[in-house]
Image (cartoon, rainbow, N blue to C red):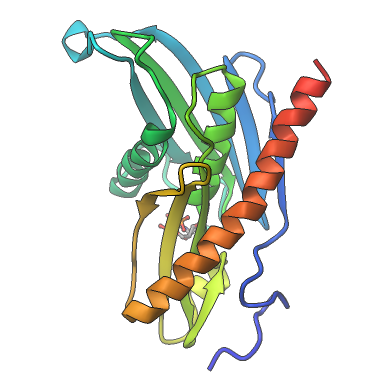
Length: 231
Ligand code: UDP
């Protein structure tokens, strides 16, 4: 049994979070989102014309996400360039953000979202989604809602919020469940599951994720307010 968390957190407690808007001057919108030792930076370019033309949608702009873990983001060097994992995470990031943006005003256009993980201690796809949502808002992209994401799961028989790398690698395995929420619409836009978990435990974990996302939203909102209060 996992009696006490390695970093002393309560089982439903997320790591310390920080967010900052407008950190990449060359982008139309950008943000940093930090949760514990996991740090994501997101930059948004667009809306701009999409090429090649056959990819254009005359009814709406499209969202295109690119997730990347930097070579130095973990102790063991990550091989640069796309991988199966980065392609999967780019796709789930896109799907998690899509319901929150409204690109109908931008036919034939693309909004590019670049997510760079500069430091990784698990939960990088979720940190990337939180940063990307802020960067989209900073870029002035019409949005229906923010997107907040956190990884919950099961470690040594306990349901925990915001799993770190130690917990993900825990003894005889853990269950990792990344979740993204649109808080105002009360919708889930990402739900993945890696490992075993019972039905009633999923419900408990989801409730933990929803509560964690409320805390994340508070930090996101504060970061946006700070930027606009400072002009
Ligand atoms: N990780 C790593 N090397 C890799 C990929 C991942 O060390 O090539 C670590 C990193 O800390 C990452 C964690 O494993 O955050 C969990 O990765 P996973 O694929 O579960 O996605 P994440 O939880 O980061 O969204």
